[in-house]
Length: 235
Image 1 (cartoon, rainbow, N blue to C red):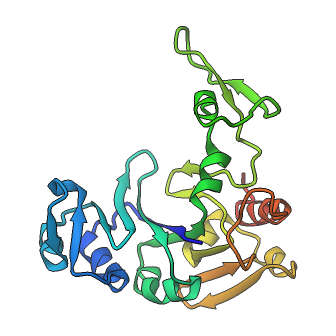
Image 2 (tube, rainbow, N blue to C red):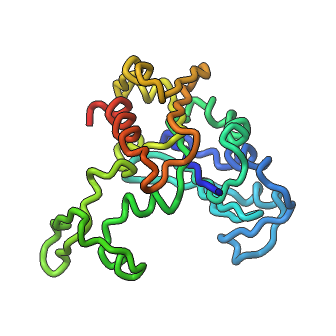
C-alpha cells in the first residue's frame, strides 16, 4: 500500500533546491514531468536550476509539492504515492529532519485523511457516501453563502492549521524538540503508554504508535485521541 508524507518547516526556510536535492534519491528515472512547465520532460538537474521558492513535480509515480502556506507562516513538503518503507523514507529525509528549520512530519493514508477532514456535503453525495449519521454544523457564513457542513472537529484523524505548525496525527511522526517545547507536549505521558515508542534523534524526536498507517475502522481511534491530547495539550 502506498502512502503520503508531510513535512513542515519554518517560514524562513525557502531553500527549495535543498529540498529537491534531498528527495532526489527517490527518483529512478532521469526524466521528470514538471507541472509548471506544461508537462515537458526535463532532466533532474535542469529542474533544479529552474526551481525558485516552491515547486510541484511528478516522477516515477510520485508527486512532490513544496509550497508556502501564508496563513500559517510555514512551508510544507508533501510527498505522495510512496512505496518504500517508513525507515527507508526516514533515511532519505534525515538531512531535512536535522535542519534547524524543520518543525514536524508524519506519514498518512490519503483516503483516510481526506474523509476525516471533508466537511463538504456535496463531496459525500458525488461519491455516493452516506453522511446521514455524521454530526453537522453551520459554516457560519452570511446568506446566501450559508451552508450545512460536516462537523469534523472531533474526528481522530483531523488536522488543523495553526500559526507556525499543523496539528496532525500519524502512525509515525517526527517533531523538532523546539516545537515540542513550544507546544508543551507531555513527553512523560507519551512514554507511559506501551503502544508509543519515542526515539531521540538529537535534534528531533521520532514518535511511532502503530506499525501501519492509520485507516478507517482499524481500531486505532483511541490511539489517535491519546496522541493528540499529549502532543497538543494546550488545545
